[in-house]
Length: 329
Image (tube, rainbow, N blue to C red; front, top):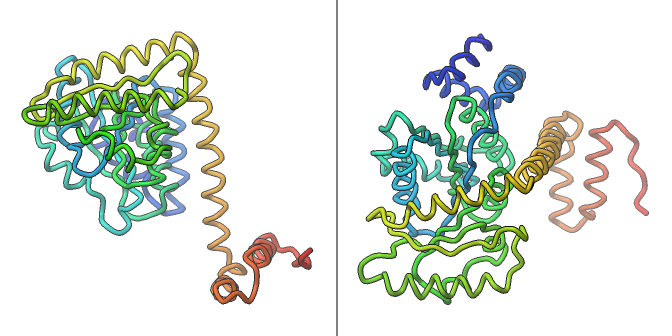
């Protein structure tokens, strides 16, 4: 079945693509081997897209932007995949499911593919599946992959660790809003875009862009060859979208010519490796019978300050490894 599935993905068959992503999202142990074999088949045909991460504050118009941006790229002959990293989906089901209905034109376009993140699971698990889905979409011929952060907090870092360029969408709010944005998220941005720069908000958008530009002057850019630009657009009226894409293409060319893009992707692959090791070890530790037998009791003892977290962790790890518990130093 696996060769047929990989052949279908490589041929651009949308059903095969959906089945392939469903396979790599599966938590069944017997599916993991098939998923890894499928990825091994497709890996040589991946890596040929421009990977763009998109994050934004609530109400920024992210769905409208993604649809306008995606349709602009498709008009230029590109094929666009939209994926999501949503650690909150365990509780909410993931807002991109609703976004897919709001992005009706993009969702109906045969040159686009929109895939919600899997419901449930940890951020690490969701991010892993999104990375694998990205590779499958690339093998299926999508040359632009947009990875959206639906959740908040660590999801931005997870997305930045799997894309070439991280784009931060902001509202024309200016300085007050900038103070409310985590510095670490701004530092991740390779590009800042002020959306809703139209109508009565156009002057506020210009002021906000100037303030964001000034604020970036206090941050050290990730690359000496690229200073993150601050752009304006109106996703609703589809203005400024062409300039955003032109800057992304320029970024890609600069990073490719300097070798930084290859280095960045290699480092991301290494980070992915250790993330896989951490996630797998943690899962197997929790599932281990000797650990499961003692876990609840030790958790309660830690919560009641009857034992230190370090001592409880050592006991659980010793149970996992089949070792005799050492006395605390």
